[in-house]
Image 1 (cartoon, rainbow, N blue to C red):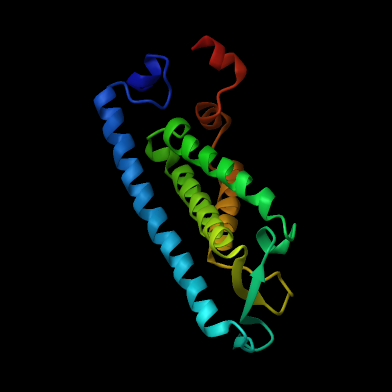
Image 2: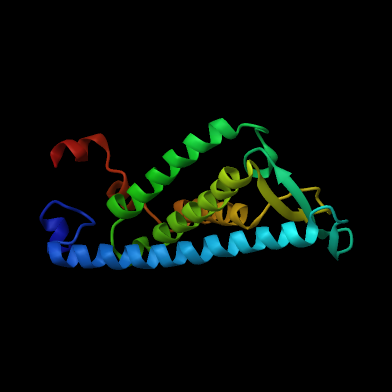
Length: 193
């Protein structure tokens, strides 16, 4: 049992200075990683506009995978078309929740590193598509799996999909109920603090 747990504050550092240092480091690393991921998303979308807009699809693997320009005015994979006024406030709320969980709920411990990674991926994906919606009024999509006729998607969508898949795998095979109690304490635990 850690010193923090003995003091009744699971997941928090016992020493406030250590806690601040860990949060500061976590914030800097998360910010840097998010900036790199967002930049990668924005650059790939810009390249798609330059090289794919008003052009025939660029076939990478005949009958399987191609690059095809699409202006998506809906949510991920084209659902809820023309719902921009719904997406903007929802995205802002989602971003606030991600930042809150990243800094306030996910413990600064090695065991929870995967949750930090998932939060950064969700944040980066949301910001990438949010930026497109603000600037263009639509999201640029360009990856297309012809073989299965999968909806056209972009790099930000990959971040969100990978984060969701990893979260499911971690919930099934890595984290236990006690781990989740530290991130989302039950009502009984909250009252006892």
